[in-house]
Each structure stands twice: as structure tokens, then as C-alpha cells.
Length: 149
Image (cartoon, rainbow, N blue to C red; front, side):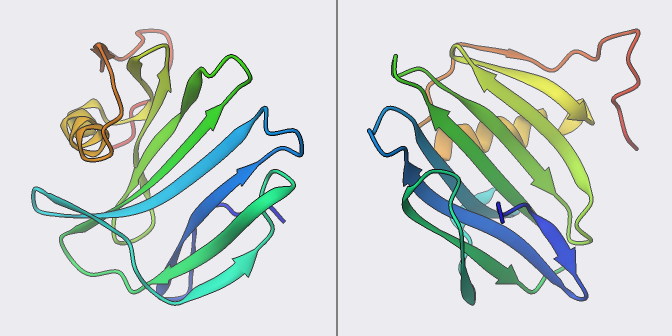
């Protein structure tokens, strides 16, 4: 089963994956991170193996004990045969609620859902992972109700 970030009792489960298709045309990278204050670090905890999206590679579920004041990040990136990278950066609070989901495509970060005030943290994560971006768009679309409080 494909790993998806979720909360299980008092534990937050994030996913780590590095896989590619049989012919190596598509690649998937999933990176779990923790934000403490203004510091971003790789999430570390007990791991359990799970199946990756593509045939070649490995994937793990990482169990984290949530702490107050920490935010948890799941970065999902896919590279296609033209070597274009796209994906999502999701930030969760200690209760496992999604705060913001940003889409990354064509060197742009764009608000997909959540509160735009967390856009600064998405940019912090992108800089930490050396993800190149030229433009950001944290504006909320007026006809869609995507802002959660």
C-alpha cells in the first residue's frame, strides 16, 4: 500500500521513499522533515518498511512522537522523463492537521490548500532542500474555499 502521512493514536506517521520505474524514466522522492522554530531537520524515528510507488527502490514509514511547537513536513517530488520535477510540500501541526499544501511545478510554488500565512515555512523548506524556485503565489482564489483556520 502506498504510504500516506497520517496520525495513529499518539504517533504521527510520515513517509520516506526513493524509488524509480523499471526503465528509470520516472523517479519518486518523499522526504519527511521536522521544523523546530526556524530550524529544519530530517525526521528521525522508528522505521517500518512499506511498498514504494515505483518498482525499483525502497520506502519506509517513520513514526514520530509529536511535541508542542514542532511542525512536520512531507515533501513529495516526482521527476518525469523530460527531467521536470513537480510535487507537493505539506506542513502538519503536532495534532496531524494539515496547515498548508503547496504545489511545486515549473520552478513555482503555489498555494494548493491551507492557510497562506505558512507560505514562509514552505519557502524555508525549499531552501533547506535546495529546491530551485523563481516565483511564489500564496494568494487565495476568491471562488474557492481552501483556507482552513
